[in-house]
Image 1 (spheres, rainbow, N blue to C red):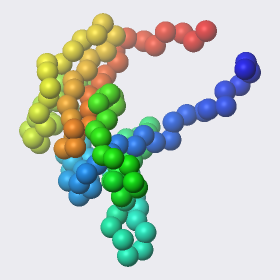
Image 2 (image 1 turned 120 degrees about the vertical axis):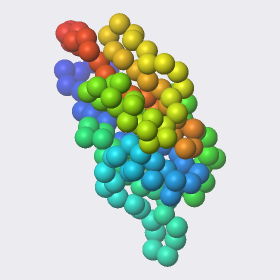
Image 3 (image 1 turned 90 degrees about the horizontal axis):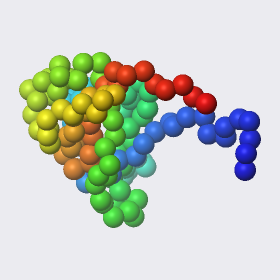
Length: 135
């Protein structure tokens, strides 16, 4: 199927599984410093998830087992944009984040990988090369 306009116009959120919502909310809110926009739960029940805003994408934390989904950490990293990767890395290290390796220079961007408390893969990312023209 070929059309002149895209059906999909963006990505609203990505979901990450958690086995401990309180610890995950502390990490995303206090360690990463992302603003929490919601916590969702049914009346009288434990919370099922929480959402945090990055400025361009919502990160939705989901207690997967409360939805009948077996918990399994997401191992392909979500790239979190930062302006200064070394400054951001240093700040996160001071907050207890352990990075998995040295910062990588790919030739177009810098990347530094780490995990959240559930083992979900994340990275700090800064693209310094211009994006190629769209054709």
